[in-house]
Amino acid sequence: VAFMFFQLHQAVHLALHEPDQARRIARNELHTRFALISFQSANTEPASEPDTFKFMPCSLKNIYEFCSRLGKLSASDRQHTVFCVSPQQLGRDVFLIGCWLMVRFSLDWRRVYDCFQPMHDLLGCVVGYQNVDVLSCWSAV
Image (cartoon, rainbow, N blue to C red; front, side):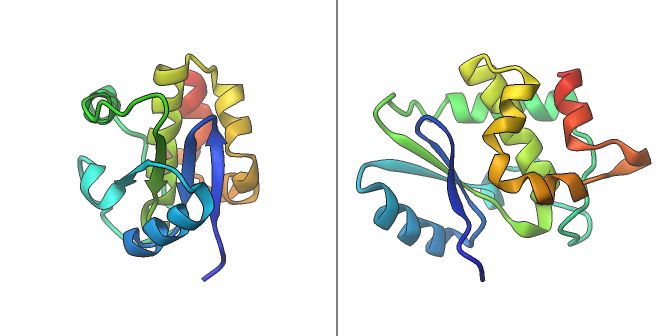
């Protein structure tokens, strides 16, 4: 498995690993307190089929529930947040993280896209239902 751990924005990081491996990598990379957010428990619905590049647009309810759950974690500004993303739900998870970045840090969709710069090649492949992609959905939010 390729080493996929990178900073998205300020104290926000992304790990494309299983939770245990992501936790070990975060400890080695950050050397500080962090909250590990695993999408195995954070998603409101599981993916219907395991396809790395599948993306189904979420409802506003899904976005609201996701952002609300993260808001309740009450992480301090000094604590890092590490999102542990499953390759099977890459499109959906990245979309929800991007929405949270917009809400939490008041970023527009272009800045969110720039946060995911290390993943631009993968994001270009994430096209979903009726050719709606992650960027189109972020720009609509």
